[in-house]
Every structure is written in C-alpha cells, then in structure tokens.
Image (tube, rainbow, N blue to C red; front, top):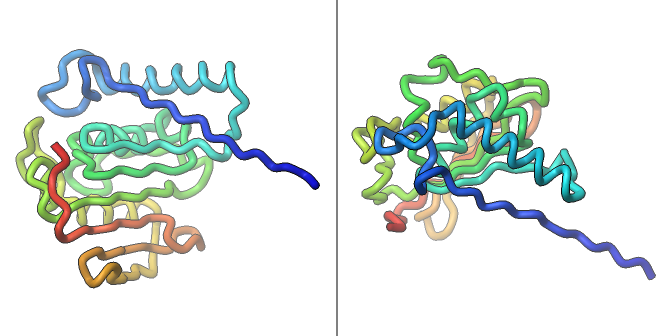
Length: 191
C-alpha cells in the first residue's frame, strides 16, 4: 500500500497599511512596490519550502481582488502565478477596456481568470462607477476584457442554484473555462 500525501502552502500577505496600491485611499506604497513585494515574498517561500511551480495561484477579495487584477496585468506580476481569482474585486487599476496598457506575461499562454461577484454588492458595485478609492469598471465588462485579452471564443452562459447564480465562461487557447465569471444575484457586501 502506498500513501500519497498532498499538502498546500497558503500565504496571506496584507498590503502596507492594510490595503494594496491602486485606490486613492492607499498612499503607503506604489503599485510597483507592491508587485515587487509579492515577487520577493514568493521567492522567499520557494527558497524555504518545496513549491510546485505549476501550482502557484493568486487569489484575493475586494481590494485584494483588485490587486489580483493588477498583478495579472503586469509583466512581472503575471509571470509569478499560473492562474488568478478575485472575489468582489475592486479593479481600480484596470479601467477603459482591454487595450488600456494591461501587459501580462504571455510566456505561459493565456491568463486563466476567475471572478465571483454579488449583484447587490454596495461596496464594490457590480455595475462599476465611483468606488471608495476612485472609478471602477463594471464587473461583466472587466471579465469580458480578459476574454478579449486571451483571444477567447465560445462564450457560454449557465444558470446554477435555482437561477440565482449565473456562470459565464469562455474557451481560450483550446481550454474550456479558462476565463470564468460567477454572478450571484443575492450576494451583497461582506463588510
């Protein structure tokens, strides 16, 4: 009998002053400094622990979810992770459409992206507009930009959980569901 042990390494960094660069209320660091911090942190983890380079994922919520979008758009930030996921992301640094200076590292191929958001979120509004830290894009548009950036096709929409959870997914580079969005009708703010 053989025993297979699978372990996870989870790291929960917090931006300087309790937030990540991007919104106007964050003045402690710059976007460049925060991306370099994440790179240095990941290098430190990899030097001290056995890390599978093919299974490194970036995940965040609210301001952290927005920073996930910032990392994904940056050449260094996007090279650090194999996929990205944001929950209720406040995407202050990714405005104005898919061709807005977002320049991810494409050496690994298309950028896998997942976004989950509540329609009645009053803190990070699903429809976008003025947020606490500046303007934000509408969430459906933002996810669509990632489908465009990845040259995706085959948009598919499903209704789940009694019609209150909606999944939109795209096929990108031959991979079904490489970009996905879950819109939850009754989900509001967490704060």
